[in-house]
Image (cartoon, rainbow, N blue to C red; front, top):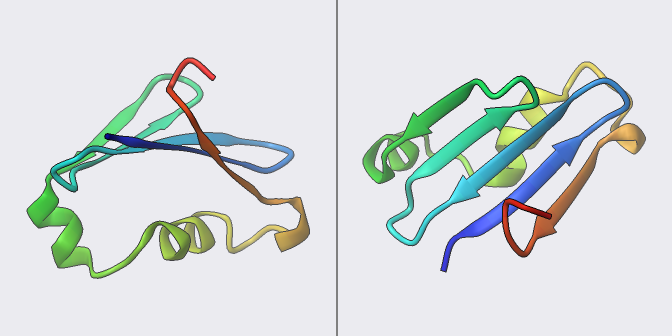
Amino acid sequence: MPKYYKISDSKDILYITIDDSGAVIIKDKSGKKVFLSRYQAKLMKIGIEDLAKDLFKNVNSSDVHVEELQSMED
């Protein structure tokens, strides 16, 4: 079962999907997508939390919200 996450701060929103194979899809609010295969994601040696910290490292951490969604429609 895929996992869906919404990562947001006061200025931006990212949607992250991790499918059953371990592949990762990162989508911004304008619809731009980045696909990482399971192998690429494994080579990066980072988890979803590390990715979120890096993406929003220049903002106040109390402003960043990570939310697990039931589906991409949430």
